[in-house]
Image (cartoon, rainbow, N blue to C red):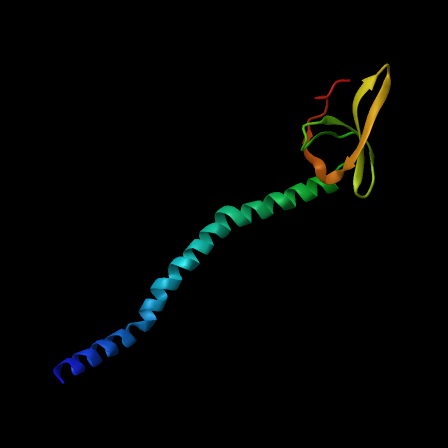
Length: 114
């Protein structure tokens, strides 16, 4: 009987520390999620919003570089696409059409020479 009372006393101590044990397990998970949110998810969302705003603001005459590395001058703008002059051959412009979302950045005026 001596051993049974010791086992019951140990069980009551473990039950009393149950909430502390739960917090010890949950708090690190919450901290890890917060770190991922502030260092990975939030900056990515901010970049996506900036890119969407930049794509909405594209106008004729802007000089841009695409995600594929093609640079050119915008000759026409539609809802979802743009016409991009990438070169001039014998005085005639070479124009390609592509999606607005393919534009990576707007270049300073005068940076493209044909």
